[in-house]
Amino acid sequence: MTVGLTVDDVRVTLGDNEVLKGVTLHAEPGEFVTLLGASGSGKSTLLNVVAGLQDVDRGAVLFDGVDVTRRAPRHRKVGVVFQSYALFPHLTVAENIAFPLHAARRPRAERAATAQRMLDLVQLAGFADRKPESLSGGQRQRVALARALAADPAVLLLDEPLAALDKQLREQMQVEITRIQRHVGTTTVAVTHDQVEALTMSDRVAIMHDGRLVQCATPEELYRRPADEYVARFLGEANLVEAHGPDGRSPVVTGTAVVRPEDLQLVDADTPAGRWVFEGPVQLVSFQGSRYRLELLAGHAGTILCSLPPHTDVGALSPGVHARVACLDPGLVHVIDHRRPALDHVPEVVA
Image (cartoon, rainbow, N blue to C red; front, top):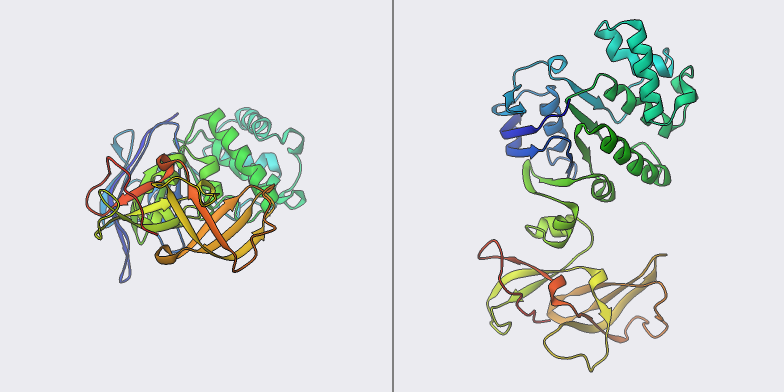
């Protein structure tokens, strides 16, 4: 059972704090959407609204156009994976997975068959008789996911599902959750504060800030064309510099140019004019495994961050040495226009 999910102009006030300020979001049937934001942005409250665990002051939640705003959680066909996994320690893995079917009084044979099918799906076929305490964190996470999917939910909700795992295991589970979600095709909404997790798993990412949904788009669109400076800064590293236009020589600031560090490269003094060029004394050079991180102080543009390939010869780039970097492809520069939603051209920047 796959449905489209719509959150329509939802407002929630808790005490004197307006936590959600008119949030509207739509997920297509089978789509994986992640709510990404800092603590206090409202993402967990929005997830609770969809689950039926939080009442709304205004607005509606719809499954395939049917208003479920006033339905209790048990009548919404929603599966939830909590950060703590919430497994029953006295039950076996198979019994934990089959628990929603047991609560729904499904026949024993159906419960057993579904539990085995879910164990196969999450690649834990030989763990049916184990207790949760004997499992690793990643295995417990898979059991919790299998239990949430056992009752064939209309919508799957993931509340910081990987927060308790270490970095290496978290990266493995990002791929695994994506595989499982694609296989079952259940409309999924996840909550996380981890940017890499959101970009890796999602069809679209919804950036939340101060109770509002700022931008919802594919990971590539969010990264390359952020709607505002908050999204640009929040999603990865970015150089934000004043853009002057339309010819680049105007003293009037018309927008903010977003230049990603990996789109800059070292250049010499012969670089043709009209490029996005930044120069100044080196502040810091650090090796970070997959890259060198170069910071230089580029006049009015301030500190510019450049990401260089790990094979770059940085022997001459000691602090204080004058360096020059440039984005040689203007198409990689995105301008957040202060006057209108989008620009037909990319103005020059005065560094």
